Image 1 (cartoon, one colour):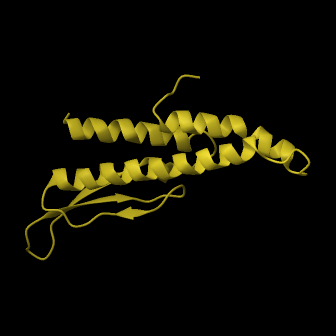
Image 2 (cartoon, rainbow, N blue to C red):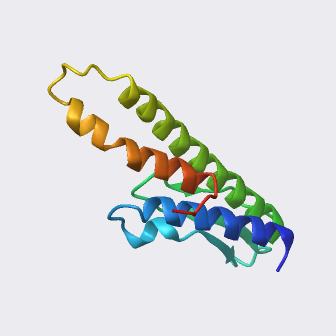
Length: 127
């Protein structure tokens, strides 16, 4: 396995653990690089991800497999970063939430989920 494949595998495990914390759709856990032969032209590679969590991704037409894998890795890292920022913001909001608000108990109950999500996105799977 190449170093790039190892990076993608490690990032995809972080993503899988994160989306698997709660109910998720299976397609969130699949990242693709496809090779195309079309119209008698030279083949190209393209990375994809179809998601319920995060964003769908369709990479550019790449001339090498490595280029497409780099795009896939970079997009996966971006999705992890975006979700981590989302959880960090919500965690901070929860910790400073007004105790007099009617939603206070619910917001406080979400703190462990945000903390676990951040750990998973950082690659820490210890419970």
